[in-house]
Length: 102
Image (cartoon, rainbow, N blue to C red; front, side, top):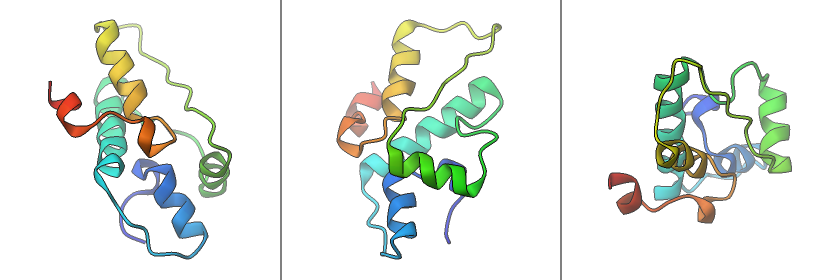
């Protein structure tokens, strides 16, 4: 398996469960970017504390991640919303690369 499970987009996790070759696309990278940015801000993965099986169950169920923000984190609502969109379960629900660059 290539990559770190806690930073993989749900569609990649699902394709690995189904033993298919995952086809990464820009939305896959947007999800991973959201994980990295969340780690920088919160000091943990948005999927922190979950086992491999729980991550797989989460990906298959399509449930949103419960993002907790540190009290010391001051940000704009826009940044929090952007991170939430980057971490959407569905690749079509994530922002485009051009939207993230702004």
